[in-house]
Image (cartoon, rainbow, N blue to C red; front, side, top):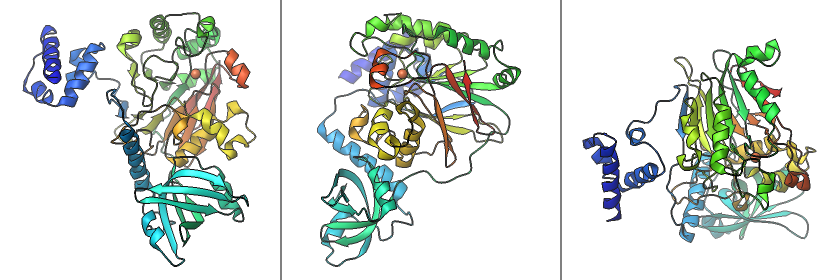
Length: 476
Ligand SMILES: [Fe+2]
């Protein structure tokens, strides 16, 4: 009944907008999930025309993966199914790996009486240290749980195991005994070693994050320099030569500072209305030349649901962004393909704000003890997550939607470019053919950052040469 009413309402809106309700439209409306999706879109401001013929955007940017599941109530079973879905997805990546000989299930290992070599794939349910300082894991698959001992005598393996986090899926090869495996090899899903894909001609992408428009600490002057650079009136001749070939500007979340994000937030705001903040953002970004495509995803300061995947910014709050003719709004995270041409398949971009990064920066020993300051660890965390093929493996590291059908935070496709932000300091790293880039910010150090010892560096914009894959830091 509810669907029937929604369907009627949708048809009404179509007719009022003089859009023909043809057989194709009616066919699509016979699917309950389409009815929900369209109803939700129409009531949050999407024009009906966009539903039947999505707006054509720049052909050199294609969104290849996005998440548009509607919000609904979740149960405990959803969490169970979600972790099972994660297990299946990572299992697929690990299955068939040479290091995992004699792959079997945990229940079968537990039946073995004799010592034997075997491999398993499991999700880390527990991690602890024995009296003798060996690492003891509990791995779980759909058939059961088993203990895995990693002795500190195997130095390389031990160091690798120290970095393991709860809920990540790994492969183990070792020797079985009653109810335990003595690990010899630890296998992460990781990304394969590959040659970086290069664009056939010189072209550039700039990576921004955390613009925080509306904050009293917004860096007006530096942002103005950035806009002037884009318009060819700022920078050295070399910097102007780069911008003449700049095709893409990515903004990896925290477009605005938001309202009520933390206690007494209003004291640090110059614009206290979220809609006004987006209006100002749109005014600033309307000065970006129209031949440059803007790709905008939300972050934890933006309006709307912050559980990941975050939906693209809605017209309800961010209507002025929809008026920018060169802007593409995406969810967070998302996958895009950019710069494809007749001879070139394009580069695959994984775009993610980075809310989970703080956690790994602190709890992974090799990152924490890397010697890098807490604000310089973003690229290391991104590499760590690529190795896990997951944007937030540990349950507590971010807020997420426990989708029962699939784990949307699994990195299924290996990205050529991995763009993020959140840490407020730019960083970059090349890892196995993937160019990792963290954007900086346009907001001076907040009181909170001061308290927790973060050291943001404002107005630094990493610019990626899509032909050489080199990254240059532009300082405004
Ligand atoms: Fe931010």
